[in-house]
Length: 169
Image 1 (cartoon, rainbow, N blue to C red):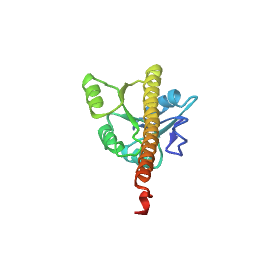
Image 2 (cartoon, helix red, strand yellow):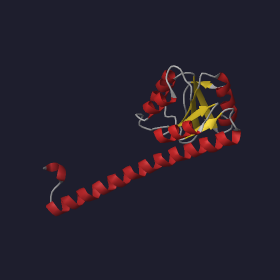
Image 3 (cartoon, rainbow, N blue to C red):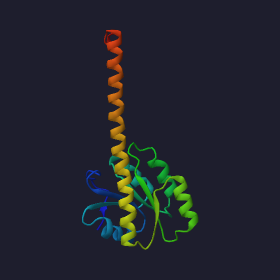
Image 4 (tube, one colour):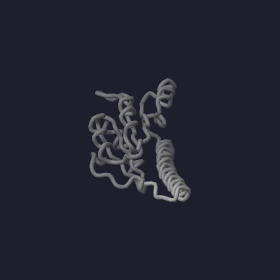
C-alpha cells in the first residue's frame, strides 16, 4: 500500500514521488508502478497536507489529480514554484483533453497523465521528470561552483593589483 506522508529518503538517489489525489485507487495503482523496485511513493488526499509535506521533504516529482477539492492542481503548481528545490508537477486526469494539456504545459506543469494509468507511460513521464529535476539540480550546483570560483579569481586579481586584502579595507 502507499506510504502515507512518512519520512522521505534522499530524492537524489531514489525516484521519489508524491501523489495528490482523493482517490485511493490512484495511490494503489501508482504504488504498483512507481513504488517498485527503485521508487518510493508518498500520498496525500488534499492540497494542504501535500504542501505541508513538501515544506518538510525534498520530493522531486508531484503527481496531482486534476479535480481536487478544496484546491486545484493550479494551486499546487503555484505553491511548489516557491519551494527552493521546485519539484516537477504532473497532472493526472480521467479526461485529459487537449485544452488541459495546453493549459498545464503553458502554466509550467511537466506533463499530463491519463487515467487509468498505463505502466509504460507513467514510467516514461515520471523518469523523464525525475531526470530533468536531477539534471537541473546538478546544473545549479555546477553554476554555483563556477560563480564561486570566478568570484575568488576576481578577488585574487583585485588584491594582486591593489597590493592589499579586499576585506581589510
